[in-house]
Image 1 (tube, rainbow, N blue to C red):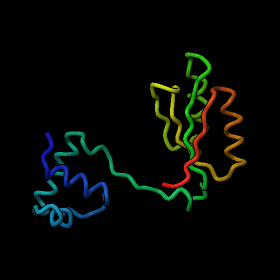
Image 2: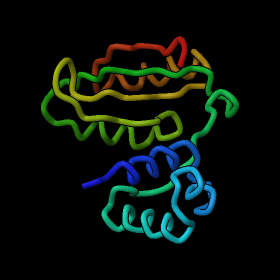
Image 3: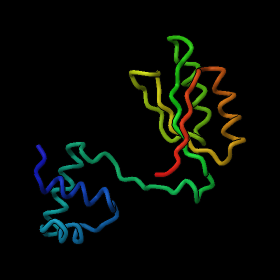
Image 4: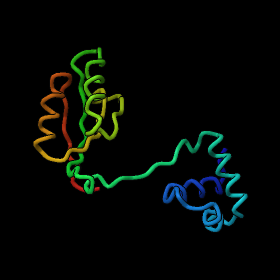
Length: 136
């Protein structure tokens, strides 16, 4: 079970995973070594799985952020899954869901032209509903 200190550690690490253990300790009122031990415990428990970075997709040239509700044409999803595996440059996440569709596909595109080409190719494997992000 996680206590308040563990939750404070997770909150601070989610804001800045590059923070030093000394700085983190100062924020949560523990010594550097005690903080380091707590973080190691959270890693060993699998609560902290990995440390990542967040990229600015617009600065990388991907101006369109879209969500697609995917409706596969039959119960065999493998053709769709194989298709998207070859489209990784546009994919952020692919979630298998229940409800109004089979998957939610989060994508990034550099232009409407590229997005349209992707959607036309996707339509050979699945139907979709497109939602474009207006603001984060």
